[in-house]
Structure formats: C-alpha cells, structure tokens
Length: 156
Image (cartoon, rainbow, N blue to C red):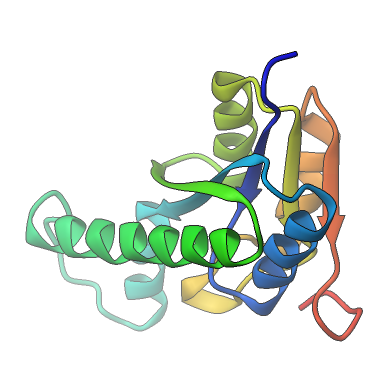
C-alpha cells in the first residue's frame, strides 16, 4: 500500500495550528504537506481599502518579500507538524483566484488521501483561510476533508 499523503492548509492561525495538532494525533508518522496559500489580490484590495490608491508594481521586490514571508510561514507550519509527529514538508503557493480552489488543486496534484483544515483562518488583510474557505474545500474536494475547530472548540 502506498504511503498516505495528508494535505494540511496552514495560515498561522490558532485554528490551523489545531488542525496540525489533531492530524498528528490521528496519523502519527504519516507524510503531510503543509500548504500556505497567499493571494496577491488581497494585498491590492488592502491598499485600496486603506486609501492607498497609488499604482504599485507588485511583480518586483514586494512580491518577493511577501513570497519569502509566506514560505517561512509554511516552514513554521511544517515544523509544528513534525513536532506533532508527522513526516512533514512545507509548500507555499500563490493564488490569484480563490484560496479554496488552490487547496483543492494541490490536493488533486498530490493525490492526497485527506485534506485537513481549520474552521477559520486569520481575519482581515492577513486572511489565508477565510470563513468560507473550509466550507468550499469541503464541498468541492474530490476526497475526504477533515475540518478541525479551533483550540476553544469554536472557529475563528
């Protein structure tokens, strides 16, 4: 039997940390890919809502800095997953459409047996797992999805 691959959506929120911890309890020693997805569009929207209506070239240094920060976030998630007993590797993807869609696409690409996500991610500009993201992953994935509530038993 091939080794089971688990895809864990991670954004640094307490809910995503709870998802990693729970996956570690259920599947110790299993291979996990810890996925952090970031949206360039979110950064553009944040600037507009903050009244910064200046044309900004996002293709240069800024994207590189954001990409580096998100890669480091994914690496921290993989460290947490290893601490939880999983054989984890980090992955960071840029998304221009919807975070949930990228999660589903990566799960398909990896042929993951399971997607694990928290109920809610970070809010506001830093949001990577929006409130509806776990719901959309649940309804659009072609594989089992485990949605883990936050540490207080509540999403958010």
